[in-house]
Length: 254
Image (cartoon, rainbow, N blue to C red; front, side, top):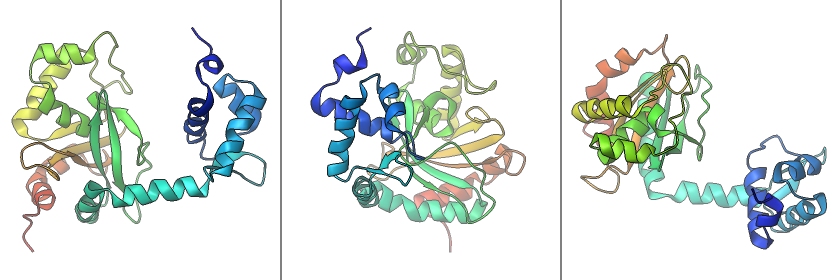
């Protein structure tokens, strides 16, 4: 395998350092960064210096490197201005108020779902691993299975989508085979919503419905409600499905 330091030069190296920096919200020292990048310290230091000049990196009081305020300002300004984000926030707030659980808006990106928006209730929220911009395997999440059900309609399409890479199994409940995923996607298509019964995180149940923010026929993404299975069982969310759909479609009665 080619060494990372041999493959990354110039702007590519700077961007790779920026991406690695984003994985360390508590900061990372130069030596650890050089080790993570498999590059010499002087090389990484030059990349960090370029990022600091642009305001994309900074150093905390302990000399550790963190994302800079200018980078965060640009990222959040872009995110807040996204049309889908702006349109989905009132829906997420209403669902969050109704169920007192964490809600997401996510889109599909290959084998992953990407969380575009997330809203936690003021109190009592369980700490989930999801975060805005973060990813989870599509086949283990309610939003992912729902969105996949629109694209993968035959067993062969499911097998082609999986390819040679085995399905990951974050929990013992995760789907691990093409046959299992194909059957689950068929059930999801028939009922029109996706579920995650402790398949992505132990003890967490989730229900997802499609969101048609940019097209009346093709979902732009999916909206989900996630909570502790003992407090908000999946059955409770399914029982409330008519109200959830009414909130998402805007047909909720005052």
